[in-house]
Length: 82
Image (tube, rainbow, N blue to C red; front, side):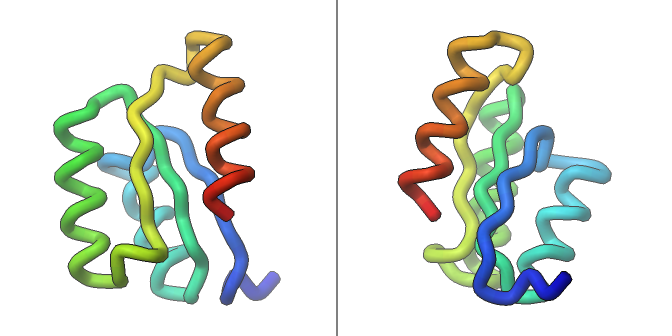
């Protein structure tokens, strides 16, 4: 699958393996929306990656995916962003 020009949504993308996946997708030309419960780390990651890849291809949204309402809201927001 070629991710160029496609959108990806990732949970837990602020650090560790999740961040690595976000960066890999961006390096292949995908747009990435990621969420994380750690708002401070998520905002920092978003800023770093926007500087590297561009503000229009990576976006962070704070969310706890164990909360049903927050989880559902992410999919609505992702649909609008992509």
